[in-house]
Length: 121
Image (cartoon, rainbow, N blue to C red; front, side, top):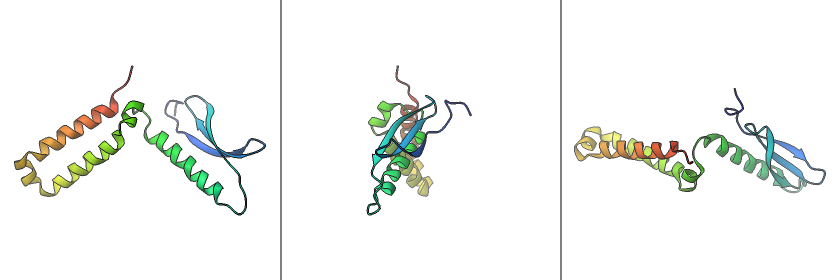
C-alpha cells in the first residue's frame, strides 16, 4: 500500500497536560489534528472524544477522492438519496419502465457519480 492509498488512523497520546486523540495523515506522514480531553474518572469524556476521533477518521477514509466542494454541497446525501430512489423503483420494474422512472434513476445516478469524481483545479 502506497502512502496515497494508506488509511487515516488515530491513537491516544498526551501532550504533558491534556490527553489527546491524535489523527494521523499517512499521505503527509504526520499527525495533523488532535482532540484534547481531560480523562477524569467521573466523566465519560475519553469515550465521547474517542467516538469523535473515530467518526472523523471514518469520514476521511470514506470520502477520500471526493472533492471538498462536492462534500460541502451534500454529495454523500445525494448519493444515498439516489440509491434509495433507484432501489425503490426496482420493486415494480415493469411499471417503473412504463413511467420512465428507470431512465430518470439512471440520469440521477450518473449525475451524482460524475459530481463525486469531478476534480477541482
